[in-house]
Picture 1 (cartoon, rainbow, N blue to C red):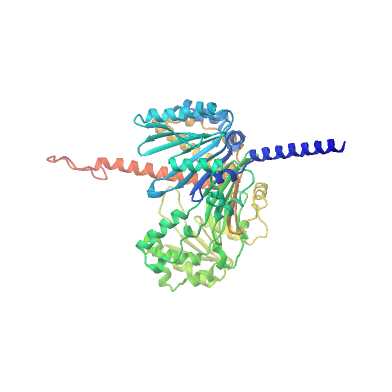
Picture 2: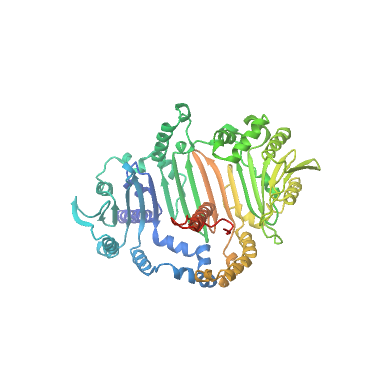
Length: 597
């Protein structure tokens, strides 16, 4: 009887252990993927479960917004003008049927400026099932490159299919349940060796790299997408370039990129929101400032109409040294540097005059067409701060700054030239705070609120609930009320867009502005974006939460700005075509800017 009980217990323990190992293999983990890649890998991206991420994405607020009937109706014409995606959708559907897991992509090296790439994923089913999908991708590549050479090679117990279309090479192989691909045959063989256990030295893999291990220790246990970047290669090239163009003394000082050991990030989707975590492994930059932490003291300047708030540690004294060295790059910086020099203002004066915490707020009352923006700095020495402000207002040749004093606060204002949006740059300086903005009324009201012990903004439910989603910041904090922002943008821009459509009939061929969704449909799926940064052990950790994250917002704005600038340049270049010189022998003069001969 005892023997039977022992056998039952042993069998149960083995079953539990087997279940645990199998279950663990299905969990989010980059360990196995990093063990497949060589130590020198520059970049790696990893998606643990493709189908699960797809399902989570379809439950996100931003996807639900996209699927709203009014939004779909508005996007129907723009999407119809794009190329048909039926083939891509079908391929994606077939890929989903393979239930791909541990999908990864890696940049192995950049030798001779020729990138070596590798990737792969685990699949369910047989190799034949996977080949039905992957074979279509390969066939399409061959169709687009009719001169490509295709051959099959044998390595160990694997069959490698090699497709060469100069200068591109793609080598693929199955190692069930894995599919691997690389742009270099040697790299693919290395992948297979590590997958089959033929590579015996674990320190030669990415998982054995100290910088990678330090970075992964900051990542969450479960994520939808993870990436890792080793900037050493780029830093070495930058150092070589600096050594070639700068003096030996200047090259001894490391740039920020050269101090970075690694950059990694993870994204997860939960409760409709997107969570981002970004880690930058590097020495603490604020160590020379005594390790001061962020206080968010400028929160009291906010109101119930505040949609944007930012607070960060910024040692202007240290940054002024950099600006003075690079003053020749900017006319404005040159003016400021010259004005400060003429007034005898030194870097030490900057450090003594102002604190480290830079604040920024943006309000948008419902009665205003445009928002108001404020910048704030704590004042440590009002006399030195006043000297700096006086010097800054003398950078222009014409004395257009007016000065006034009210309730012990000094105000400096400058009336800007008449434009579409009239602005009056204003600086207020008290014994505790410097406030700068583009509207004297908003600056004066902010100064009054700075003396209040309480404020509408930090006590608002939206702000309080958003800040609970991220850890307390020590270096950087940002908050964006996307509901309020979109409501104000819609009220201000919708009439202008409809008017533009009336005067530009060609616009209707691309988009029907009459079908622009109502603001209520959009704001239903919007919530605040909040971002928090701290220094933890060996690097900076930044976390962000929202319908889209702070990092995604910044990247999106950068792309839109770049696209807008490119379009403006293209339009400007096309406009110059009318300024060409007349043909030889022609007496017709070139058109003048005014259009008169």
